[in-house]
Length: 226
Ligand code: CA
Image (cartoon, rainbow, N blue to C red; front, side, top):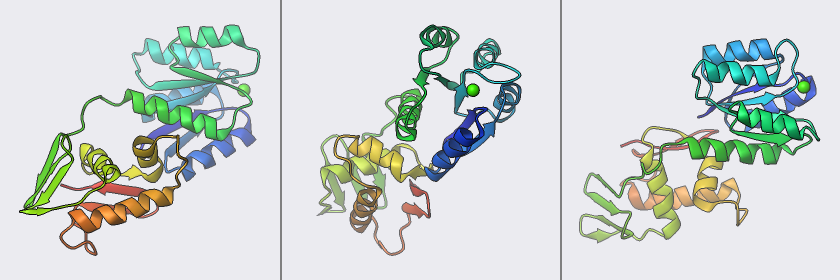
């Protein structure tokens, strides 16, 4: 689960963003001014900071510049007001990773956040094959067997499994799985993920009713336990 810090001095917007991201299963920290935002960033080491530009006590610029000069590699997404073209450029110069102009939709912000987090992940960690018990799954050739018995996995089930296996014991939210396996093009729902996990489990678990590897984390998503 990724940890976000939202620094925004407009109380209504701060609350809406915090609620929205918590609903998507992020861990959310909030600050209403630049100074406490900077302090929280140092203390809590979030994965990503959503940082408003115009803030009391210390501006978003200064927070960004200070964090970068401290050597912090945390992702920073700047929020700017409409028309602050020059400000955006300065923000990116100071080391922000992306920016979004107000007003924006929470959906758009959420997509940007996911994209930044995804890009920041180390590449090429996905395994080529998986072995456990007497199961052998080859993700390159899309072949799966339990002993001599062929497991008939669909392409999406292979992709979903490969993703979960690439991050053992790491809980992945339904939204994350949707983004990674289905992308944005088809607009499936999180139910789609549940259905695929259900089918996948019936194939890769010896006792699907008491799964030992493909585990449901209630209210959040799924994880693979080797
Ligand atoms: Ca502001």
